[in-house]
Each structure stands twice: as C-alpha cells, then as structure tokens.
Image (cartoon, rainbow, N blue to C red):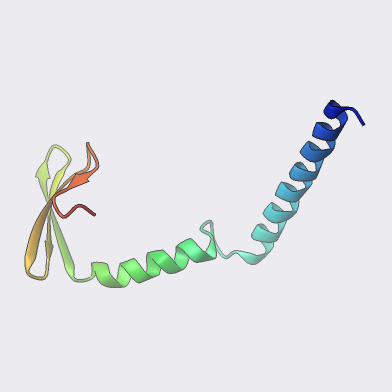
Length: 83
C-alpha cells in the first residue's frame, strides 16, 4: 500500500472511534460534564463550604479557609498558597 492510503485508513479509523465514543457518552452521561470530572467537582464542592471568598477589586480575592487567609489574583492565575 502507498503511504497515503495507509494514512487515509488510519484517519477513517480514528474518525469512527471518535464517533462511537461520542455516541456512548451521549447515551451514558447525565449532563454535560463527564463522570470523572463530576466526581471531582462534587468532592471539591463539599470542601468549599468551609471557605469564605470576598472580592478586593480588580480580579483580586481574599479567600479565608478556616484559620488562614490567602490572596488570589484571577488576572494572572496566581495565589499566595501556590495552589
């Protein structure tokens, strides 16, 4: 086979795989978020009940976590807790 024919066959197989995976996802998933990410969000949502966020202006927020206070800058994606 020519190399282009092989590449075309691989492309068609990948497209078929994408289609079948997308079809399975539509049938199995409840909502728009995949199950693994949904579990992670729910786990973090339980923890977020203990956090108080107050805006400081200009995309900067003060996050109070039980005993500590952290400054989060959304504009540059930086936090003083380094998370």
